[in-house]
Image (cartoon, rainbow, N blue to C red; front, side, top):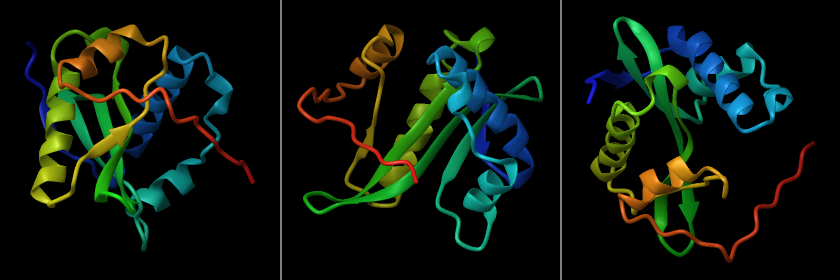
Length: 150
């Protein structure tokens, strides 16, 4: 296991974070779907009303992974984290960095008294599915993803 430094994201991390997000989009076969501007990304994380938080994984002084989350509210469960993205750059996968980021995010939610964490995983992403199974995650095939783009 490669031990990365895990820390809270700062505004200066945004360009590297957005590059990792674009790398994930390529993996998910949707490279043209990342349309957020750098200005919007920075404002949403570090502006007057930030809506997301993130943890960064650094190895040899380079950002190699992120865990980006926000708070959601369930009328059944209360406050929960929503894990938007857990990304480790391709060359650093398999070294335990995703585990470090995931566990830091879980611990953050616990420290805030949240009731759990939810996220999505693509049904063909078998490595990610197996990773989440190690945490005894509940997989729900009953719900259908729905969205509207304005």
